[in-house]
Length: 306
Image (tube, rainbow, N blue to C red; front, top):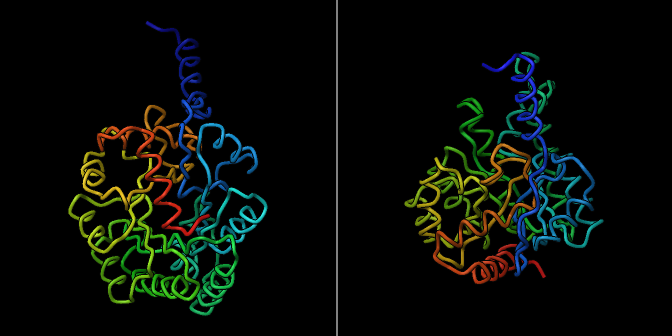
């Protein structure tokens, strides 16, 4: 039987391992982009994150905003780093929070309490996103869409109004539309159809099944897969990825979330893209370099990158 002190030491060692960055993977021979990440949530210096990713063949990086402050941050990072591009938007869950506020008893580390701003505050925030969208280093409007997991029915109408406003912004500026879709597949497709989808639509961190993937493919929507496609419980995602046409396939980290195997549970960052790319290459029965070339070309086309 282990002593209490030895058991505690082992537990502390496991806890430290969970917070330590995973080691560098074997570099890709063909560079691929991280099509969706949140460097502002990862800690550390942007230049260091970019350099670490580039050292294993991950470049460029698309930094994604989820609110006004995060979107400003994304634009600034993109302006200061040649291989960083920005996506700007109000996350679907952000719109109801702006209107209704966040009560003290519902506040979290990630979402502090704030007063209700009402419809005027939402319109002001959307106007700010519209202004940021004009920046030359903004390649997408997102992440926007619908999220029925974290927001209840009382926020659905506000989410949809915000989503439609983002669609209009993407159309007005000729930028790609980056979709966040959680537990809302039918309504996301309905709104895109009804509002008139922009020329380039990307479903970030694709979460649907094979049937959903086929519907998106029929509409010419790009589908981006994150590290959760490697999880043992994610057979539905692998089934979806298997039917995605190669010309519509993208790869992302959504870091610091969804760290791919074999490092699930540890901090995620753009340099871990190779694990997901290799898992998809195996799934597709393709050589790693061939899929990397395809994904890189798709990203340039989807986001109008040089």
